[in-house]
Image (cartoon, rainbow, N blue to C red):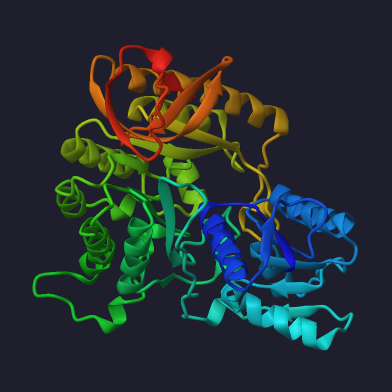
Length: 447
């Protein structure tokens, strides 16, 4: 029995794809082992979202080769796709290169390599920019026992000025609804109670379906596109055994009153929404090629709070984007302060070769970016604490996941529907069980 080791870099979509490849290998008779010495096959699912991600991808490829010089090293995913598109050579330590939309061919490519027994590097990389085919991958047992991530969409048409992903992932391609439901049912049969619908640009789910769909009377084409995501959520909601549904990152334009009103009627849908912001300053948003204003974004947050009460709103913010003046940063800071997010993920702008932002004038010094980041992080911590305090004295349902040692003591931990992590002082194993508890103080909350 051959031994295989896999390593994932990057987003939840990458993690899903890595888990799907692992399941393929296991079904083919491979023994999957930790990413350490002794494997016959090493697979690295790479990331290219930043220059640092590129470097980490290269480091992991070299680490695999060093652990076993005779092993087959496979590089797949976004980094190798982007390099191939630029006609850049892929590192000679790699035996097999598999681009995006080709990971489902893994076993066939491995067989091809074994037959050839040549030293030439095998490359299977498609023109990602001219394919409308959704890559068929399937999971029955994701890594986390209580929560299953399900990839429902790939690609992005947004072309934000700082982002390389549309070039590495191609245009929007959506998974057929029935295929998603079949996977959700299988996960439920295997004991999973919570699913997370994820994609490279989840809000675009189904826009590639619309050309083959008749517009309903009274509905615009835009409404029809939003309907695709809503119909998907509603269909997952009907699956027996699933008690919680979470959504990946949403774009503000997907949050319409009709969408939110109908979504709020689905009790399994968690009131936890990641609404991508990036900046609270209109001038910065325009340079980023984000297609909304700060005020429009604020209105979307208001809609979510109107129908869901006290939902957990989380976001991403970039500080130090090219040309960001002190006044623009102050406007962004004030906006984040105004919205009252549960969690704010702060990123210092990093040049990404191949994007428009990398060539923009007004690049911000690292010291300035670091100070702005520090201030935003401190603001985020205060807002997070305030949101958590709003639950003091209230009963919440916790889906228990695992045992965790905290300050030398063993606890069982899990998450509320709002994704607040809770510690339970219980001896009896509660894994994959839902318990209702009252939050008394912040000692029960884990950060």
